[in-house]
Image (cartoon, rainbow, N blue to C red; front, side, top):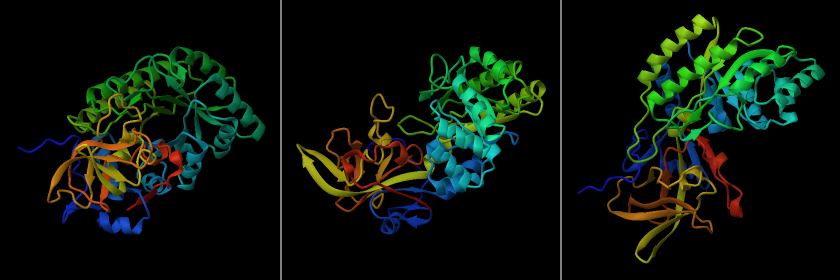
Length: 409
């Protein structure tokens, strides 16, 4: 009887001679090019994911990449040629976006705690600032007056609904994100008296969702809310950013998101938007969905030990490089990411083993009691679904171990 996998099985990366291939390169060879543990992102998979979206969504929808998912400059540079804009969440990400050559008016800046210096940089760059408070609005106005630059801005709205079945809820109820929908008319009234170029609204209600109907409902709610709020706008709305929320499968029982019904419903929403707000662009903002499945984390086994009958494979990197895979980045009950031994994808023998990192904490687990090929010291452990919220979302300085490298192949 074949043992069922304890994780979602990936099929995007090919295997030849029992070795994983990344960007057409055997993993063992790629590991010789890169020192230590590393993340590898496959540019072919990035390109195919954007093409998949273009095929299934209406052509009039503007596709933006949310850089917080993976701000590696080479990844941003590659995606910037495929998408219609970038969304940043810090001055550091803004620099990467500008270096990629994206025109400023197609870059937006969201985040509930923008500093004065960040707002100054954003105004000077000419990007669209998603205003998340009355304080930000007044600060942006003052900066523009001081610099002699008319700032571009949109209002980020905390909607009165949420994205049902989402991994992280970003709207509905009290939130640190955006301006409560019921307060937006008052903000727009004040905005009309300031020398700020109003662009539209940013309405983001949740993320990591695999339920197409939930996404459809949230998108329709966002469009209708944007239309309603536009009645108080000082000028015609140019852009309505309804966020993303598209998820990827990680765990047993999860299936890839079906884009077909989402695309069909978006055609209807585009007609509604054009009837109510002629000329307004509809933007969706995706991060994880664009990059998550195109990346892997790779770390080498440095020890193999058996403790009271349980096999432990100790690797040179752990939660310090990949917090999410350890289960400490939002999981309530820990589940295994898809994990494999990259140079023994099937292997001659199999066993139940746990993969643990080098850190002095029991939280440092990359795989708990998984069915894996029998591995030895020097073999390469691979964690799939690692292209989003990987290295930059992990406590790299914890216990002062060496950091991980990133490569785009």
